[in-house]
Image (cartoon, rainbow, N blue to C red; front, side):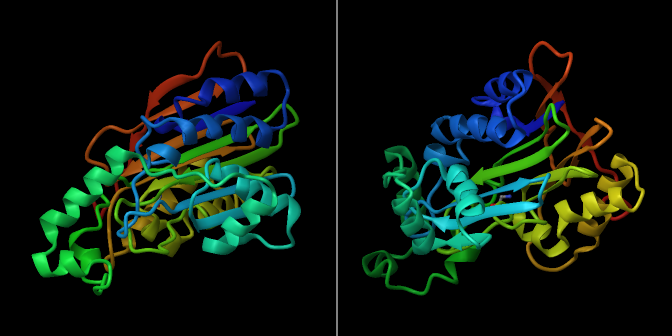
Length: 311
Ligand code: GLY
């Protein structure tokens, strides 16, 4: 058994580990943990603690994947919903579809009994409003939001504030793997923007036969490179886990147009190995690991990637 999650997972990692220890199914274990992260207002990238879009509204992204079946469920840009990873799981289990977005996702949440939540914290609203007041002219503020928003995506949108999400990967007592993600996405993002967290193959992927991977930070890059799928496919093709992650990093490093930023790849394989590699991150990146035999989850430090393009 193994459980791997990014540093934001601290409110839920112990519960996920305890559930795995008691032989719960992997998806149950990581969904229980991620729900704690979504409810914790101190985690400023997920659920109640996240930041709103350019219009000051919360829009959440989440995804789950069952490595036993390669079943996927995800939701993107869904308003007023916490816990949103649970909604993604319901898409996988109750619908013939894989992904729902926006109002359709919220309608489905109503149908399965998830209450509407005003998830925008007063502190988040204040910081968003101050940002608008700093960047917009008096005329633009008076007309807001009936002004073109696209130019603001260069000045207001703040990937520095939140490049993060929460990701959980596990292999359970029956050797089945699962992945789950949840985020509010970039602060002040263009309304309707999807990151990689609801995009299977980009922000997450799991195939119990080979491995599972999930990414944090710049979703615009991992969508372009299908990073999580690249890692798992490379393992299938015979790469070691470290070489599979290095291949995915090389592909990210080859991008030289569009928005370029940091990415962190989290991955496990069917041999019980784990790897967390940070690419273009200025600060040290930490992550949570629990494996069979460990009393508690431990906070570890990721390996910084060294690519020719970075050197
Ligand atoms: N990786 C999270 C996002 O891009 O929204």
